[in-house]
Length: 180
Image 1 (cartoon, rainbow, N blue to C red):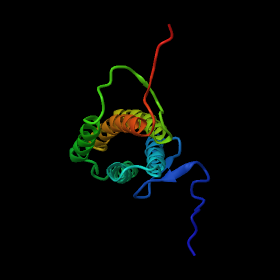
Image 2: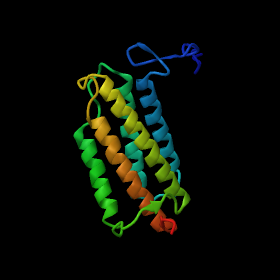
Image 3: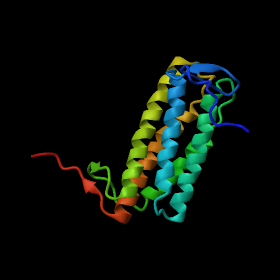
Image 4: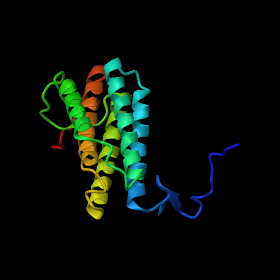
């Protein structure tokens, strides 16, 4: 019988695809973890009562994040994300943003539970993007494709628009009003 636990990480290392072991404090491992955390937040968002179109977008983003995680876990493999996936997220942004009024002021994250989940996912996405950018700066660009950074950049923008969409449909957008 196969067990989930292997005990191979008990001393602070974890395995990459191909067998290489890295410290759990390694920047690549941080990136993998942040992409995984983002995917979990998207799972929570998807568990909300989303319309069919939005639920399909969230699920597609989760699949792409698994692709990015696989890319990060296999340092010698070809990049798995492409500019086409980036373009798809741009189309999602345009589709949702067309139904929103122009943004004329800052808004507070929230407005509904689902909108708050989208905003949390957005901030986790930005963190993953920062870590991936740092990893790209420390590795050769041939080892890590640029599309992953672009994808996370667009995905965070999309999550902002998702948050706005959900806040408007399930509650209200709350404007940030500076103190007098």
